[in-house]
Image 1: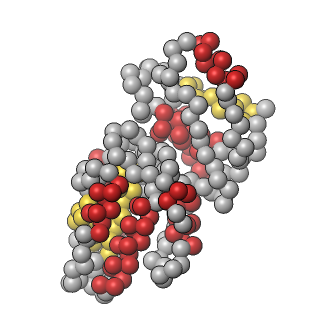
Image 2 (image 1 turned 90 degrees about the horizontal axis):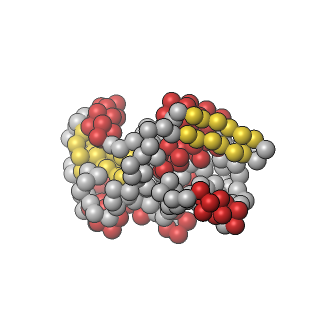
Image 3 (image 1 turned 180 degrees about the vertical axis):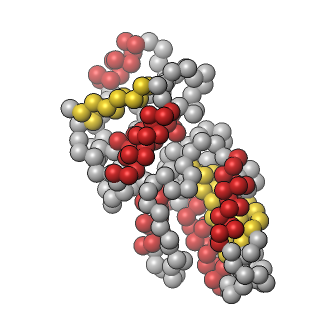
Length: 250
């Protein structure tokens, strides 16, 4: 699976945390395999490299009965630097028992506590436990990328395209002209939930001098095939985040 397929994913702001198991019973070989899988996932993703709220910001922790940082989101400048830091993580002889619950509490209280608004925990509605696969078995990792990191709830490519932003044009006639002459159909499935999420997380947060009132109007001409719970979650979040939320179906 080459980086050309995934390097633009995720396009929305995502806080991504990897927890490396260093507890008693973990061999050096297994530890290195897990670290290499993390590097493989990172190398194929769009990594946030500046203050623009697009892409994934990555942190790595290690855990046994305690949890500690290995890489913070502020430790690297770009994807290349992040991959270098990952390659430098070394196996340590484990001495303590495993406590996954404590590791998750550490992530919630210390990592996600200081994140920007974005996708945390399981807004996708596609929670999954993926054991580290044997070498050469990429199917579980592909499912992780598609369903959790890229929000593709089926094998068809779904995408959101920003035609123009709030500050691109300063006159109504220019906007109308663009819509009439340049707007092109994406020819993909209707994705209302993904569109709502992109508006809330990819457009509103990155706008300079935002207006007091926010409005989202969804115009859909196709049948939506996203997970119902995901669409419902995004719709509820939109209703609580904006002043006007409307849906038009043609």
